[in-house]
Amino acid sequence: MRRPFVISCVIVSLAFAAHARTRPHYGGTLRIETAGDPWQLPDGIARQLVLDTLTTIGDTGSAQPSLAAQWQSQNDSHRWQFSLRPNVHFQDGTPLTAEAVVSSLSEACAHPDPNHAAAPCPWRTVRPVGDTVVFVSDASLPDLPEMLAQERFTIARQDATGATIGTGPFRVTGFANGALTLVANDDCWAGRPFIDSIELRPHRAVRDQALDLSVGRADIVEVPPDQLREAEQQHLNVLQSRPIDLLALSIAPTGPFAGRAMRQAAALAVDRAALYNVIFQKQGEVTASLLPQWVSGDSFLFPTDRDLDRARALRGGATPPPFTLAVESTSPSMQLAAERLALTLHEAGFTVQTASSPHTPAALTLRLIPLEAATPRAVLDEMALRFGQNSTVTGTDATAVWQAEQAILSSDTIVPLLWLPRAWAFGERVRDLRLSAVGQPMWADASLEGPR
Image 1 (tube, rainbow, N blue to C red):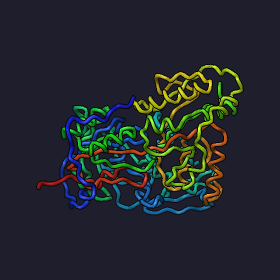
Image 2 (tube, rainbow, N blue to C red):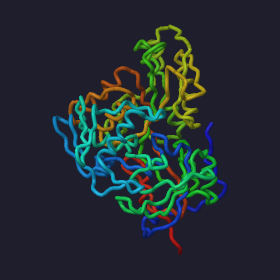
Image 3 (cartoon, one colour):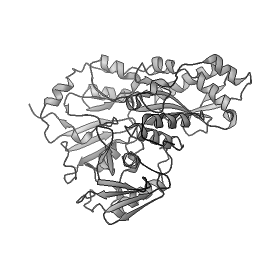
Image 4 (cartoon, helix red, strand yellow):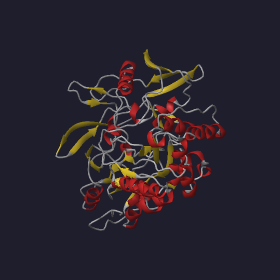
């Protein structure tokens, strides 16, 4: 069932530490290949290269300045005021203003990306006040600075040609022969990136990416979690994140799962160990928590064992009608995971059919939710928004977070399964590529090997 990460020739692995010792220099074209859409939320690489957010997540997991230089809260975090960094310009030379930021955020809230399953924006109003942006919310938003680092809150505008531009380290110059070309933004507020240009090829099958890396047609390619072990066995240079993607099952509290007992039965029937061992080749961590262990330190307290006898007992001998299991992603490993889930649910007496389209209405949906925060409360708030629920954290200590997570999971409409890492394989000429605290490649810091 597993698809090999095929390489047609041997690549000599260079130690990453040796890469780091090479002094970075300017120049060159970095060739990146990806399976996804470069502009699609979440994790659109072009968005990360072209657009900035008001804040970013620092190495400690807390919000750090980006387009906003500083911020302060008032009225028990119901009101926030963010001061913009001075002398920042969009890539067409237009100054960044508070009005432009408000327009961009309002557009994101009014027209969310249909492929990005997230709740509406958490604030009630956002408005410009001089060179500051003021947010007002009905509920307390102590984690708003961390929320504003999420990719869906990138700041963008349309230039005279209607193209999307930002303030980031690269700007788009065209799309031809299946590749999106981006060039360095010489006037970027954060400094010019080392690389002159990036050639980004989207919608590339993982097998094709691997082959292109092996023959030198690509510098950086994706490695799915289920192929990480094989990539490492082939001595590829692999950059791997901590577990930052939550694989979870969403259960619609209607139809065959209107009763809580049936939802509990489905949750107890899933076989996390089979997914972890067979489909994802023991990468990441088995979980029943909305927070990874490296963030909370206590995700191991949530029971993950399968209990098929209790699942059958909760079903009560009733024969529920057939239902559909949909998958939000079209990746092969996600499809295999859905098929495995359908098999384990069948063992508990459920009749499951996997959907042929991710947009098919379904009683169950297998989702992969990326992490965009790195502190317990911020992660829980983020996950609650992603699943369309309200977070009820009433304090900042571990007990308050634990109680809020228990409350969110108590409805049995969310079944966390695995936390999975992300990984990239890179060629020997790539230098200084590293990951942020939430596992995003820091493209602007990378450089290419110079002439020897």
